[in-house]
Length: 170
Image (cartoon, rainbow, N blue to C red):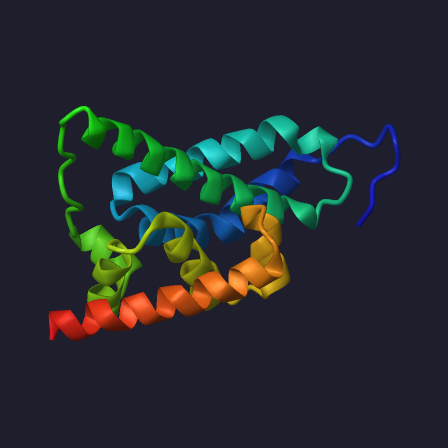
């Protein structure tokens, strides 16, 4: 649905994007970050960014792609901050699996989710975007700012590493 110049974005549309996709994006962020509280902050920031840019969107259908990319970028920022904190000698608290987190990530998947947390960030992002959101290589490449061939090679390496991590855990 393309907008003509001068059309004003309907704020109800931004609200419907929030209503329809907030929980899925929260799950995405929990998988990428590992804790619910930080994931909620990332998703909230992504929707605040969507709201502030709503009038600039030429295609309302692109809102989900925009906010999804914002969530992935927000998760990257969290990992950069955590990495910096570790470098200066402060160890972050491990993720706490609360009842809410368990509801977001089913119990039978917890082992996989915990193993995902041990993968490098790019590999984790590729696997989550591919297998959790069922995105194509081209869509993942666009969100992450890499080429589709890099997506494929990263996914292959990530699956191998994840398999090794899961073998070690058994």
